[in-house]
Length: 259
Image (cartoon, rainbow, N blue to C red; front, side, top):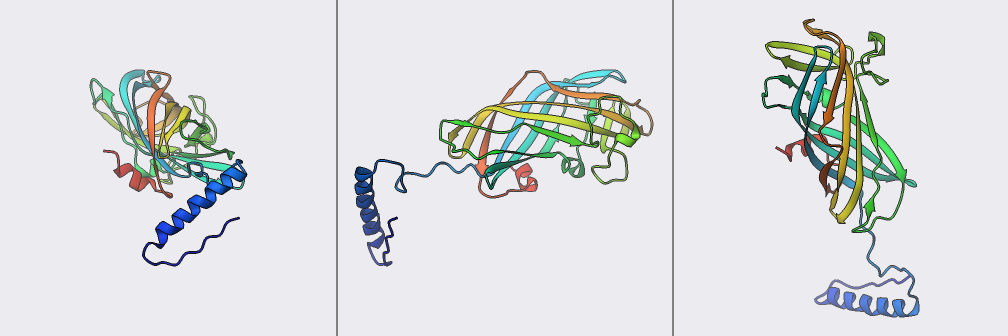
């Protein structure tokens, strides 16, 4: 191990760098194996943020209703190291599903309390990332409103008050045509960020595949029947680019970064 001590005086930093360069040169000549003089690998810990925008469909078979929509999701993934694992915590910070071409065909609101339930954590073994190399990101399954997958056959006892408002499942204020209701239901969202590459130390580029399926238990007022719901992109994957922020940046900050 090489210890270099310099005093803070004019020109001392330049001299220190010169000494380090000379010592590193001798070290490389004597022992070409990896050593402290080499640049460290990129640090992928921190908060990665992106906005996913893709066309898709929203289906409510029980009505029945299927409409096209633009699916817009602001996502953050916080990566930390715990022992021999990289721990990935994904959260959906902002969500919108405006229908097209008629934005009034189906309007759904996603409250902060509901979005706070839209998160999942997954871990993978630690690896050494390289610029230009693949980045391994695990698949995430977000379960909210129920502890099981509900796609039309769940009963009230299967629902969990995830957003803490005293109603079963999560509450989704929705308007269908002239009807406005509070819909109580459960959602299962799967997100897979595949084929991701660390294009530079602060950027990950790749493809995202996701889908959402669930069930509406009932509505208030009881205008709509219980039944399955589905949100599905029009294409299997969507290109995404994520940027790294230092530290653990909360959703409240990340959501404001994307209009």
